[in-house]
Length: 336
Ligand code: KDO
Image (cartoon, rainbow, N blue to C red; front, top):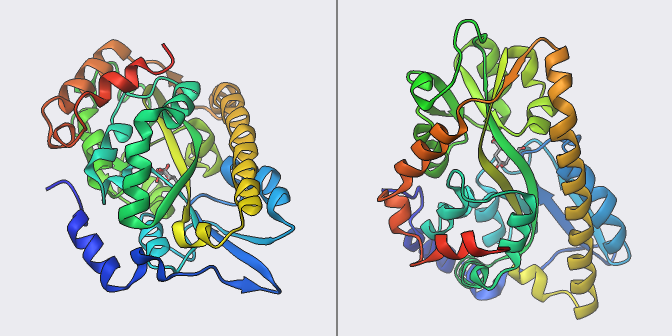
């Protein structure tokens, strides 16, 4: 069983709540539309900063943009459900969260599929994405408006390189690797050769410092923002997932905006995505020497071995069986 909520279960809950039919309406405060965005990222996370710099100014005439950080108003992986029910306006969602509702999305959560930031954007804007956007909109009441580059995910371990040097997936055998808590994340951890353990993002620092987990995976900017380097000794540059988030909004909220307001929202997100991408890429490069200066070993394993092993795990998996016919080939062909 792949999904935590099957699509049918999710839809019956949402239809029973009268939400997918469009019952939710945007709320207004001081005659501005309130746009609350929930993220488990921190206030200093690049995505959060980019939203304030790029998005907020473009919507300030008509909207009160209210971000909330660190999973405080909605816990990680519950935001989409909240939007569907009309309890939240916006979130920064992962493909893995969408996979809980639509197994087809797991192709964007699979290792070594997206090639880089530019490929991610091209895929998001390609016709192949239409069926995904429609699925989310029609069946969950969520609009995928923009894609945010989160960076290359790498394996970050408590053990020193002397204790454990990771060259191939076999070296991760028995390593208790924290992965976010959905099935598709856990599968990715297992496909790396590790023993995945689900843990909410907010618990990762403590999990690493107490030894409840041996490691975690995240892009370097996230690893530094959350200070995971303080409680780990090495980063293995596996680049196993060129990670993304979708910036999403409730369809009912969107439908309540005028065409001009919709344009401003879309333009604001485009500006935020561009700022975000530039900063993430810059930090992915510059943070290697920062981590080294903090005493961590940062090195590349045998990437060919990792790529081959991960891809082999997906072939014929329950996840891959849910992918639309030919989608991988279409994704690979984008931008070529
Ligand atoms: C994480 O939990 O490791 C992760 O990086 C997963 C991402 O999809 C994203 O949800 C992110 O957390 C949060 O936004 C916090 O940065």
